[in-house]
Length: 361
Image: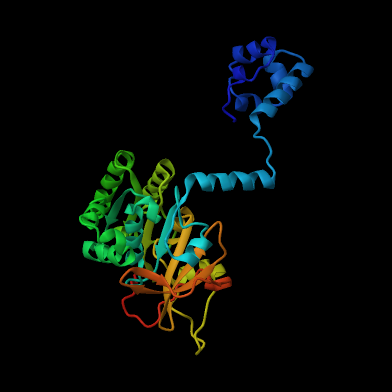
């Protein structure tokens, strides 16, 4: 609004021409000066200046909105943008329909907890015909760690939707809708992203998966003194891709041990002790605070007391909830659709008990 042209605001021609002659072109130009400065510059009276400033301010200022109008607008936007259902009932209810279009959804957790399983299932759902709750589209899967398994993908499809995948040629057709890219370095990943933007529209891409972002910058995670994030440009570019194409973007992130500096800097996250009074291992998302601010949804996958949990740790529409789950032949399956609400340090904590395949750096 600040760059709106004064010539388009309907000011009286007498005063409008004077603004133009003095090179005061936009609302910002006019409102950056006091009324007395404008009087001197335009060589007109206070009454004329006051009327002109009032009209410019009224037109340049955004209209006020009530809470009701904002709520209606949000509901309309959600209807237009949509969601990709996860087919996990409790999680879909918590997220008001599933993984949102036009936003970044992050899966964070230790190795082997189920992040790739989740991504494979979402890839199946994105290629699924719309009559079965899918998006009937293509998928771009950026497989940084070479964990993508076409055999596991077909297994998930066959066990989740046997009526579709048992049809002759259907499994091959749906698998053919998934393009897998395997960049070997950060520079190759950058090249892949630049090529993706065009293909998103040309190939009816309905889902972008990056598994995993953290592996691209192993050893360069945010620790110690603040510095430029190694994925700063990529974060912004992927976010713009999501907003531009209005598709869901799912990205995985690893975990690492929190440094002593971070424990003191981010004490708001709380410290927990075990039964013996010792501090826990302080596991955190590998890509740090800067990355966390960029994602809209953060789902934490963790294990406690021999059970796996998927936790809604960040969402603009859901309270922090935790759901127990297991991994089956058809992918991730919730054991209970009624999420357990969390508070305090539980929200940001990442547990991994009973396993040894944790990624620390």
